[in-house]
Length: 371
Image 1 (cartoon, rainbow, N blue to C red):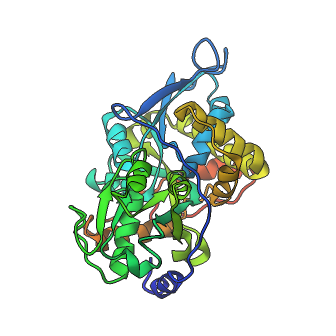
Image 2 (image 1 turned 135 degrees about the vertical axis):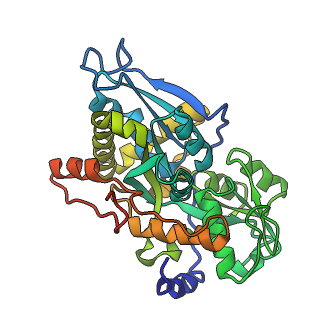
């Protein structure tokens, strides 16, 4: 975030939101929980022609912030664009694990937050991945025990959960701590505020037992905390000018992009058309996401929880590149990242090709695009 934007961000800390949220607990094994989207005998859409790869493996989180792949897979909108190429999906708890899977070749394309995408790009010196699209903005909350925390200043001295060290919410919370003038070691999480890195599926129980006093988490974990008596102390969108910030990008293995650009283009076309369908059919899309989450967790979400949570997310194709650059600076200030060179982290060539074909304007990489 620019220095000009930080005063607005600090002022926004007084505008505390109280939005109901959505909950889900999902375990993971290995890199994540795997399943196939099989629409025909060959694993693709019936007898449709395969693209240059027989299978494309995607990764995402069982979170409302990952509405695009949840709905796109549930409604068959991603598979439709792939024809005879089969879609296989894996779900993850947090971004660093998904980056590991991408680097290991276990997935080809992933929906992921900005911080792990930045880390993966920097650690590989720009060789492992590219961001190829945006997917969502919003849907991140600081939920606290109101008996222990009544105001932002009360967070000092408390134990607050984040999903994983270095993930997008972890970095955002560490930056918020720094904006308050407090000190916390980014590696251990110890300091004026104790940052407790906790798997999303464990956080609600930790909150209920009192072992954490709150959590900075995305949809859907936060609403479980609300259902356990928590209160939304802060909506992260209040910290950003215009209320928009990238929470979910689409990334691709550079190796897969080079070898199978037609498959990547098909997935992006499916993503763009899924987002358009979500915007045109918000109630149906919410129900579809709920059905997808039920498949992953075995539980259906109550309508009075789903509805307000769904409204807190904005699906989009624009990667909001300027906000990713700001989030990189947050990681630098937090001490989790040295000042990065993000030149070339975006390759929006195929996305803009898809957008033009859909009669939509091209999106911008904020001078961080492919050279």
